[in-house]
Length: 279
DNA sequence: ACGTGCTCCTGTGTGC
DNA sequence: TGCACACAGGAGCACG
Image (cartoon, rainbow, N blue to C red; front, side, top):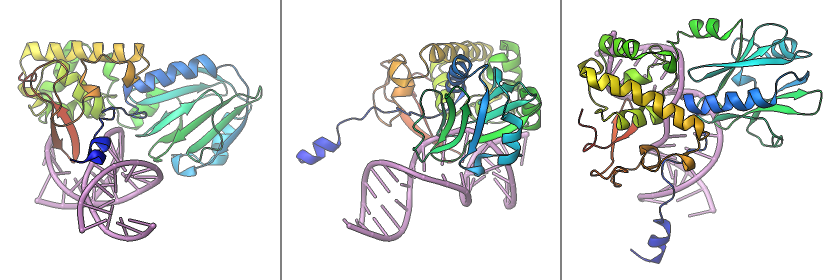
């Protein structure tokens, strides 16, 4: 290894993903939008990328929003809804790389896909580099969730309900956790995190776990989401004992047991600690 | 009813 | 310097 090899091998923060909107991230988005955009008259709607619109065109979105105000927010899984005073909700899904900008958005940013301008000069923008996000209208978020075939929000499931979902599944525990039709909100990153903290082998069949493991799964899911939201889902502020900042094959386990391993399922990379996750 | 693999999409890093 | 390719992963789809 030469000097250049040393330089390029300086570890960049692994697992740092500025945009990976899963349940905790979307909850942070929701709170920010609730803090900053309510009760302000919508003056203009600028659709910069119609590809994000689902079931509505630019004109329809403009008619639904213009002159109205946002009056409240809700979240279901990874979907965020903003109540529109004229009726209905604006539903936002951030795909893999999306996020809302509520401060002074850099409007020249070419990744800005939607700008909602308020009459007081403020704005709400949707930024989405990879254009996998979605903007839609619905009567309410429950109606949208039903139409989209989403299961209950992951946080709304009690221990017995989560156990029920797992016991009825014939798939893997990680795939079931990420199945938005069973429970909505878990993505690749947080599914790995919850399984790591619950000490469950991600390759296990969902129905094969013992009762204690289901309880751990439920408890850890809630705890992981709560702490992540408290810390604005900012990986840099999450506990260093979490897997999320150690998503790299061969690095030491953040809990001090062996090494983190990469595995693949369904074309997706996952990470786990074989020494910790033996349940 | 599962998993797998492909597609959408853009940006980054790596190998030749 | 460029070209090809893998990878990132949310979600929907065809396939076996």
